[in-house]
Length: 232
Image (cartoon, rainbow, N blue to C red):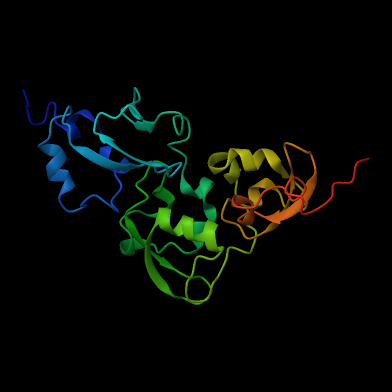
C-alpha cells in the first residue's frame, strides 16, 4: 500500500534527482511525481551518473544505484569513494568560466561529483566575455570532442592551473597512471586542459607528448603505427 512520505520514491531514495537526466525528464514536474509514486513503481526514468556520465533507463529502484549508510546515493562500481569530491579538485579549470552568485543556483565551491550534470548552468568565457548556458555534461562533452569551451572564440583551457589536488586521479584514473611528470606536474592539469604533457603507454611502454584533451580520443602513436618506437 502506498503511503505518501513513507514509501514514495522521494522518501525512500534521498538525492534521487541528482541522478536524473533532465535532457529527457521534466524538471518542472518530476518532484511532484516522485512524491506521489511508490518506491516499487514500474515507471521508467532516464538516469545519468554525475560522475562517470553514463546514462541508462530503469525503474526508480534500479540496481545501479544504492544508498550508503549516510543516505548518500551512489552509482555502483563508479563513485562510491569519490562522490563527495568537489569540482575545485576534480575540474578546477571550470572555475574560470563558471558564473558566481545569483547567476547559478549553486556556487562553484559547493559543486561535487554527485551533483546533477544535466541542469543548464551559466558560464562566461574568460577570453571574449561571451555568456552562454549549458549543462555540465554537455560542456565537458564539447571540450573533450572539440577542444574548446566557447563557441564564439574557440577558447581552450591552455594555461596551467595550480591546485592542492590531483584532478586526473578523481576523473580519469587511467590517464593519471599514464601521466609522466615533467615541468608540468599532476596538480597543474585536469582532464579538460589543452596542455601538452608526456605520457607512457601501458602496452608498449613508449613515451610521447600529447595534450590532455586529445588523449580522450587519441591512442598511443606507437601502437597506432603513427610513430616508430626505438628500442634500447
